[in-house]
Image 1 (cartoon, rainbow, N blue to C red):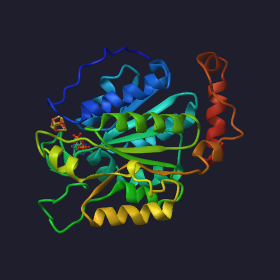
Image 2 (image 1 turned 90 degrees about the vertical axis):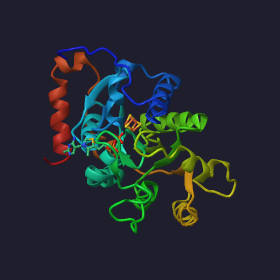
Image 3 (image 1 turned 135 degrees about the horizontal axis):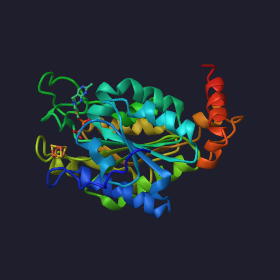
Image 4 (image 1 turned 135 degrees about the vertical axis):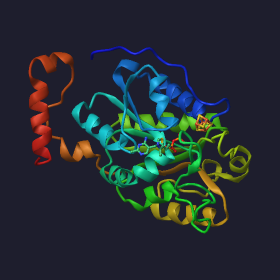
Length: 287
Ligand SMILES: Cc1ncc(C[n+]2csc(CCOP(=O)(O)OP(=O)(O)O)c2C)c(N)n1
Ligand code: SF4
């Protein structure tokens, strides 16, 4: 490390949903007892991407749309690190959409948080893939990233929250963090996080969310039924929130790195174990 940066104050507009997302990430780290020096927060480009400046963990500001491959690399290189990737719906679903599919497929041990506001906030409000009625093509349906997640059979944790329901948001964030820390794979949480400046969707979304956690008939451990139920709710113009899917599948680490010597500490690095570790990682991938 060559420079220590001061923790910044958020630069978001008053009322931006991203404040709530940052608060939930901080809550989850504290509630799980994970120290900031054991954590790396990586973020993409956008208003959302500045979250990593404000938390006080190690930080990495990835290129636009590239946060997931970087986070996967980090989680392989240092399995002891708590890895949190974050970004906007533009970053994750538009320019980063290809990486999202492959990350969902790989199921590496990390938490991925998308702050979905339906717009590109930082570049002044263009439509994102989740825009409800895109100006350029109003006949297009918005992307539902939870449906995408359900369609990829190696996903293990899919959830959606809204910043106005902070208890549920905090609880899901903690569950997702624990899922990834316990080596069960990638936890993907989409948070409805309105942009008050370019498309204030607070009242619209608060009226449309449907809480699956409060529905006794919903089964978050049944991928097929979850897909069917989400599709039905979306057809009714509702937005499903809550723990959408929770299942088991080998994580990238358990599938690829079971024979690799773990890299644990700076002492290991000094002893040359890091090089050994990376050689084993590369040979596991036959690179
Ligand atoms: C390669 C590249 N293309 C385009 C941009 C311009 N750009 C910066 S942020 C952004 C979108 C941000 O939207 P989103 O990810 O939804 O985050 P928000 O600002 O809404 O939180 C774009 C297109 C860029 N920085 N880099
Ligand atoms: S422009 Fe929108 S997304 Fe960006 S900080 Fe302001 S309210 Fe938040």
